[in-house]
Amino acid sequence: MVNITRAADLTIIGTTGGGWVANVGTSAPSSPLVQPASPWEPLGCISDDGLTYGFDEDSQEFTPWGLTSPIRTTITKSIRTFGLTLWETARVPVQSIMYRIPAADLTPDGTSGLTSFAETATPTPDRRAWWFAVFDGDTARGFYVPQGEISDRSDVTFKQDEMSGYEITVTAYPDDAGNTVYHTDKLPVTPAYSGS
Image 1: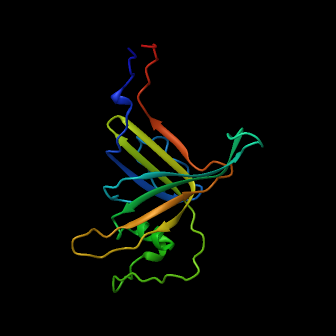
Image 2: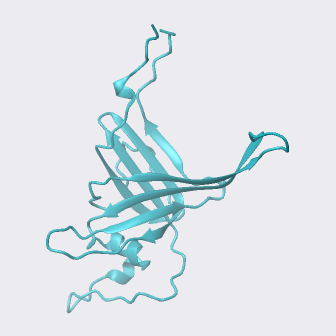
Image 3: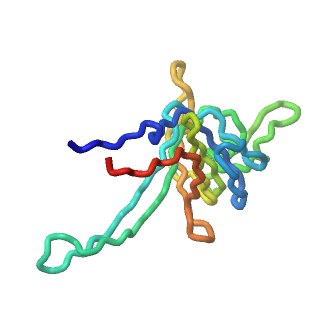
């Protein structure tokens, strides 16, 4: 009889987590276990749908004449995305990324207390650095995106029985080293396989 190797402590459930944003060029926090400090700005409450780490890849297969199976496959597109819904829509950094407006432009008027801005019909690129952390007990995963931009925004609903939120997708772009996402994890040690 074959013994199936299983280890529950090597599984991960995203029980909680957070997201932060900063200007491009901001260094990554040293660990997902360290509280990000300024200039990192928190994104606040994230919906209970959590964080989705997306893989979008295309490939080209090369099958020689006379064979029915490819002898080689080349990746022709490889994109990494992060999807989440931000619930703290009144938080300045969240408004800033949603509307592609510098946070300084969202300062309320000193007399009226009103904030006003206009949405442009010709938005310019708005790349920023992103830090996402996921926690499950003593396990933690950190994702640093040195250059990312919101590439998709959902509609925003204002309704009595529903939390308004900004559902966004952040696409990671390559940095000067050609990397899109850097991982910093605190994971349990995988025990050596004994063959039984």
